[in-house]
Amino acid sequence: MRILLTNDDGIHAPGLDVLEAIARPLSDDIWICAPSEEQSGAGHSLTLTRPVRLREHGPRRFSVSGTPTDAVTMALKRLLPAAPDLILSGVNRGANLGDDVTYSGTVSAALEGALAGIRSIALSQVYAKEGMADTVPFDAAAHWGEQVLRPLLDAPFAPRTLVNVNFPPISAEAVKGIRVVRQGFHDYARGSVVEGTDPRGYRYFWFGLHGIEHTPGHASDLEAIADGYVSVTPLHLDLTHEASLAALAARFDG
Ligand code: MN
Image (cartoon, rainbow, N blue to C red; front, side, top):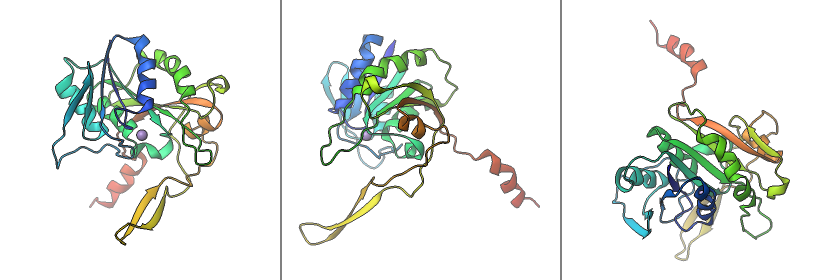
């Protein structure tokens, strides 16, 4: 089984090492291609206005000066001898839950794989910020990763779908199990915009991710994580709102 690993936090991300450790028992044909720098929040963006540089870091280990989608595209079109059987994206440093998934470079890298017809799975480690310390414990992901992946290796994936996995921000022993749940949604407009002044005296703005809340319940990925479970959510790119199709079409009839 040939596996492609990627990670939107970059080729040197600790979460990529965690993912490689999870994947090694599954195969000895592992390829890595990730952005050279952190690309969190890059979503499904593709670099079109400048060239992308490729760098080899070791056998079957590459970085690209682009987005997570660029990294997967480069791997599929230029690096691998044939299509991989599996693409794993992560383990991301931080949650990819609810309607945040469209911002996610981690989920989008898996989405690119799904569009290419390859079984693709995104993995993210939720973490809780404590004071200014910002170390992400990948404990839950490291210990539950293989257990989550094994059943997904031969599970039927519908065409153009991927699976989004999130690990809760607790120790591996405290994790209660695995729940297959729907994508949730947040309550508030996301993020914050912080204003400052640069060293030359000009005003700047910096976008953050503070204050994102959700209402418990709804049998969602957000609820599963809050309850201490690993969440597993099948996703697809088709954003069509089926229920609105007929009513909207009627507006244009006659
Ligand atoms: Mn990231």
